[in-house]
Length: 98
Image (cartoon, rainbow, N blue to C red; front, side, top):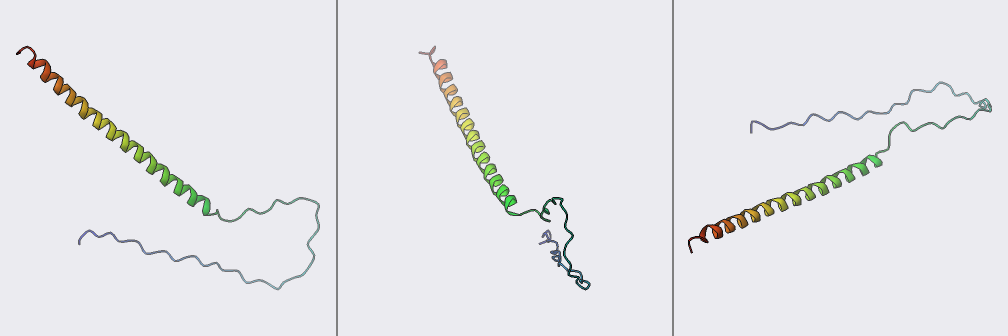
C-alpha cells in the first residue's frame, strides 16, 4: 500500500539519576520557631485525569444518543406529515369529480 501511516518511534523514558552525595555530615537541624508549609508533590496524580476522561466519554456518548434519537424523531414526523398531506390532497382533488 502506498499510503500507510507510520507511528513515530517511542521516546525513551527518562531515567531518574541521583547525584553523588558528598560526605554526610550528621548534625542536629537548627531549631526555629517558624511554621514551614509542607512541600507540594512534584507531579500531578493521574487518577483524577482518568476519571475525567471516562466521564467525558460517557457524556459525549449520551449526548450523541440523544441527538440521534431527536433527529430520527424529526425525520419520522416529516415523513408522516408529508404522507398525510398527499392523502388530504388526493381526497380534496377527487371530491369535485364525484
